[in-house]
Length: 466
Ligand SMILES: Cc1cc2nc3c(=O)[nH]c(=O)nc-3n(C[C@H](O)[C@H](O)[C@H](O)COP(=O)(O)OP(=O)(O)OC[C@H]3O[C@@H](n4cnc5c(N)ncnc54)[C@H](O)[C@@H]3O)c2cc1C
Image 1: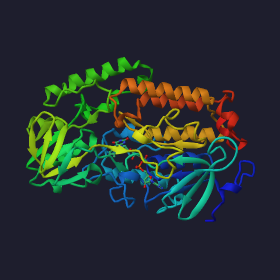
Image 2: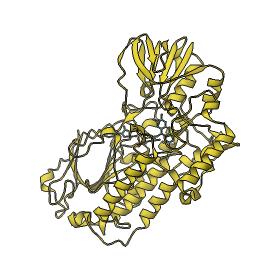
Image 3: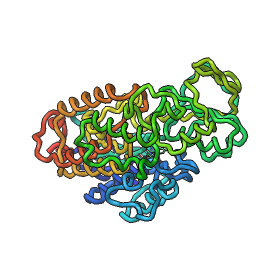
Image 4: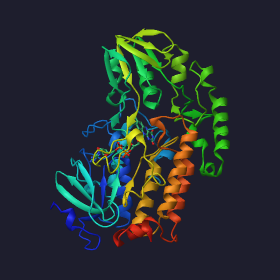
């Protein structure tokens, strides 16, 4: 592949290596690639590892596999599949990571995507091309070991579950410790005293796995948590929602979910868990059908936050202390975009203020796909995001002006700050049905006059702002 010099590439000469570049071939990269293929837009596609499917491939050689042997979807099948490619009817409601890996492989083969990926090709650097206007207004140069190539558009699809976040507790722990990211199967817990820190989905799964085989399992939480069972009244719980939710005021939607939960499982504090310090949907809830039983059986003991580590003991903020052999940090992830220079784009604290959670006027032509989190699945939303981005490239949809986008971003950030417990965990939350509707509306925006950002863009990017 010939390396291009970014200085020679301008919107006017049109000397790009391809129209677009996709970074990553996980679920979001697959959705982006399909949207580009559907529109006949030429693109390069780089993937660090040697397979598609991202974190769902337990055998991924990209160093980023987050799957473990007991992992199943926590969102149900019909709400997790890409709208364009349903999973087989006979599959279970909550398929395993192995079925999910097969699904992504099948998706790639069905749409002729597999042969388009350059595997084992990590993107190491992305920089804006020189030219008039703001950084990137002329396009983007992407560096891999194959060289440096230039594009008008960039799809950032490298996921947000690759860099484990480990809190810095005072003291030192001398037993075995690891982040949930490294967890593979429960054999490591056999006959041990185990402490899992964090009550997100991975933390719950790992604590429940450990409870079958460990001597003792402790599960520590700072804020408490609302636990959604996988089923309520005989149905997958996420199937209580419907497109109509998008039209409900949030307060009404929350009341409905609280009612379903109260009637189906009761309150956390009635089931041996601490009372959450927030209402349902003010923090990302956890989906587990197993936890309440495990706590009810005494196989998992709840603990508050950690005060300090002390050799093979852990002290908690309630003054108690416990012996621990294995400590698991199920404490989440940091967004990592190492190929951008920090001065250009830095998602410090997981903050990613983006218009409709996909783009920023600061980086024209860059689309962030999959940097969202929802109750339900983000996989269908990745496809909707990609369809919208594809429409913006072809000019089938247009953006509002920069001032309007900035206003939207500021209002969105303020709403999130009001609604969610302040934490790096809640910087990407979207309400599934509301967000799906918003993206569909974005795709229908075709007539807005260009203002703001459009004025700064060269003709090459005019499709974004027709
Ligand atoms: C344990 C766990 C359980 C989950 N369960 C669910 C669930 O039940 N339902 C749901 O909807 N979501 C779930 N999620 C959310 C998850 O984020 C998505 O399902 C999905 O895997 C994210 O896809 P992605 O493509 O954005 O990221 P990833 O799956 O992480 O894929 C990113 C890809 O980009 C590649 N890449 C990274 N950096 C580079 C680079 N520099 N150059 C080239 N390639 C690069 C990686 O190798 C990888 O293949 C879960 C997440 C975790 C961690």
